[in-house]
Image (cartoon, rainbow, N blue to C red):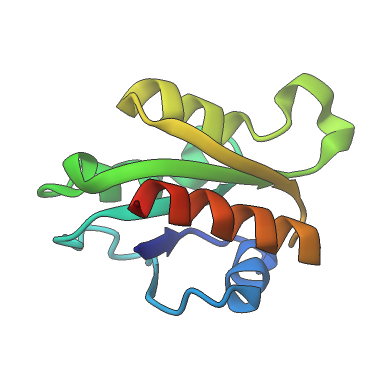
Amino acid sequence: MKIVYFSVTGQTKRFVKKLSLKDTYEIDPIDPEIEVGEPFVLIVPTYEKDITEPVTDFLYYGSNQEQLQGVAGTGNRNFAQLFVFTAKDISKEFNVTLLYTFEFNGTTKDVTNFEKAVKKIES
């Protein structure tokens, strides 16, 4: 399964680099309108909508929203109820499962659990 992600500070990118899943695509904030053309899981950091607008542009481009199979979110647990709100909002807006949440660039356990969640979708 393709993994699509958006990284603002590099935390999300660091998590993706830890994965054994190597079919990845990073959303370009300058030119997000790329059609993936295959099922994918999205990983997003937690930021205000104006910062994550490229993710929304990407999802509404072509058939991307139909190909979205689930979303995972990263953030800072110190933000309590706002922890991973971007992923939660995408989950609701596009009616997909919130697969996994983790803090910052994730732990080894987070990598394992995320990969299990992706494999479950694939089967």
